Length: 390
Ligand SMILES: [Zn+2]
Image (cartoon, rainbow, N blue to C red; front, side, top):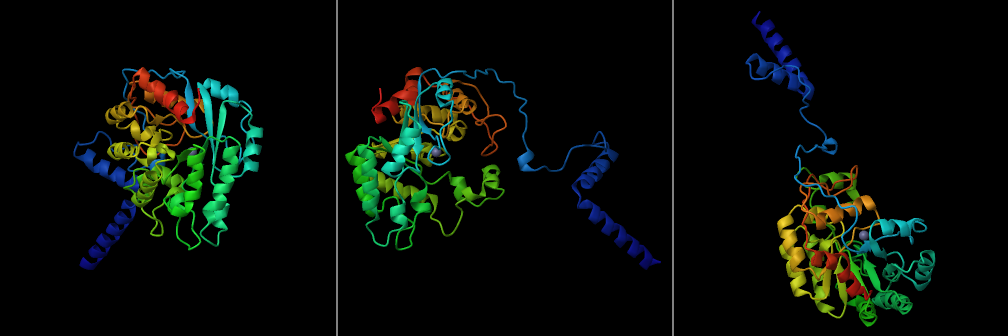
């Protein structure tokens, strides 16, 4: 008899444990027990115990005091971080001029990094003959990838010089440094590698403005797990993660960049995406303080700036001559509107991405309501000065 009871108890516990593994059942049992003691209103509830992060799209109950989404920017804009992708995926959009006008864009800087020979440059200009579209070009990495000796910089310099003579105003560089390209000895190419000096010499000689995207936000260098605040984004784009023992750490890549900025004071740089320091304004300030040849753009970083609006506002005012406007991509009214809202208004707690777009992490931003003279510089004057435009 005792044995029978024991078997029954064991059997029931087993079934109970099995059922406990299912969240909805667990939830119902919890609520039933609580309601027995009068601590829950109903034992029937539709509250799920857990949901997927990707499906977590909470609707704020906040009723903001001001919602002042601007329909136009207060002043003319130079889109410093544009991409027409015309050197990669066919031609520019047919309605480019109309889209630029809608976005208040007077000049569009096309950072065409896949264009790296005179022939390619001429083709690109032919495809997009619009006076207010200015193309930047990339370095010709072919010389490095096919190099057997250490003189790869010479071929790269020659190609760039030909384009410079044809009138290009700037160079766009990407994450190739420190993370992608390898030198003939099989090591990752550091940005301050002296073998690249011939190319920097061309940049200095022809006063080419060097727009450089270095590394990525720190979260991309950390393990992609529940502690990573950009899990949303990295889960969607796992190829953006640089958390690998084979790759240098973020600080090492930024140190290479800093050494280059100091060594090549004769070259003017724009560290794109706020120099990857929008999350750390103290460090961004020190970068600008110690490198007078460097400016920053805000492309794709209003998410970081807008979640620390007090410090960001102070920073943008203090360094008002060193910040350029950019959104990264084609003229996109839905996206660019959010940048205006961030820079011009004191709106609170809004999304840094268009409705239905992709978030980087689960947070919202606040406007920094910059004074008009500062706005003018960020929207237009700073880029115009660096590019020698009217
Ligand atoms: Zn870009």
